[in-house]
Amino acid sequence: MKIQQRFAALTPLCQQLAKRMQTQPLPQVLVPIPMDHQRLRQRGSNHALRIALELGRQLQLSVRPELLIKVGHSDTQHLLSGRERRANLKRGFVAPAQPAQAGIGLVDDIVTTGTTLAVAASTLQRQGHRVSHYLALATAMN
Image (cartoon, rainbow, N blue to C red):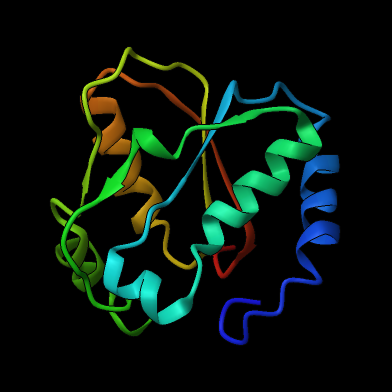
């Protein structure tokens, strides 16, 4: 899906995630991990946004991409160590001034070390938002 832009599996994968989520309290809103403009042009779409929109549709949750913005360009995370990932994303996101939002479900496509989600959550929390869920279609974490 990510590399070859094949989105046929998006709906059934999100259905499985939504099914698992319905056994616990749901987030109030979904916030996708944003991409920088250069990477967005390379890939053609933000996969986290596509996932958040489909998941939001299935769970009847609003999607609020405006709560988190990617600033600047960063190297591709999957090629970096944990330390390098944290340095790569340092000050990589901003959360514009918005009324505080509780119950945010952060959405990414793949979680490898959790660094991206942790940095994004920290950015949102500094602006008074509260992250309650971390959501992804795939993970390399145990």
